[in-house]
Length: 335
Image 1 (tube, rainbow, N blue to C red):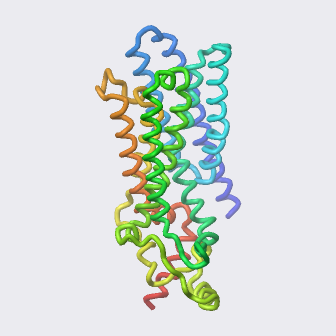
Image 2: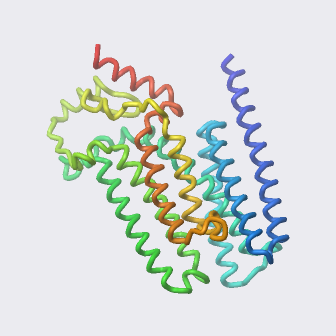
Image 3: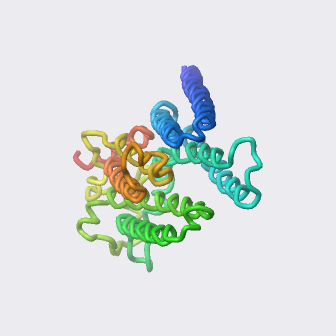
């Protein structure tokens, strides 16, 4: 029976992956066709570009909830690991040798960017939850100077501040015409790092919002080794080595699941920050590029915040067995 169920799951995932591949090929073919057709008509080309971005934005968002999460992470890793270096390499070819491909280098860059940055934020979200599951027990007892435990909210604030500094760097770069034209790749890389840093920072701040509000960034741990080991033996789960009555609030599930909205907002943010006016053409939405960048940053903070607040619901969906294990420990405190 288990083998039959496993085969059914594999077939189910394979069907959706194959369907997604065919839809992707069709969408990219249409994009290429209409790009050539409207190459001299600016607004039609921008509408075609916008529709293609939105198609893959929706496709990868929906696919996240249709296939196994581990498979999605593998697909995301393959697209990002192959795509972003290829994006940089094609830019290098364009900069030094001009257009040597059948398609224009700009079109190839656009196709790669659409694929990479449409799947980036859902993939990052699943990676965060996977990281929590695999690495929390390793880092839960880390200390500074052997005594102080650093709360993740403080790390989140440092990351958000770093993202703000990257935004300032971007403002300085765009003052030079060469960075908006010939060396635009550096602006793109800056925005990628800014997005990732801002996403992780906002997630950590909202996930640990109680300590952030209380300005509780460092905690002095004075327990003896024997006490720590005894506590671990009593309240130990596979993921979290120490669960006490004082930490129960950390595992409180929201009544309304908001993480899907958060993932949607973060996905929009990634595309807005990278594609800018290609996602929201000024002829249609009358928004300046800097307004779109600020909108993307705001959506990233809000979306990552919602995921951080509702991380336990997403964790329960991806790892139901680990969730039940934690719930059993929490229930034991009230018995």
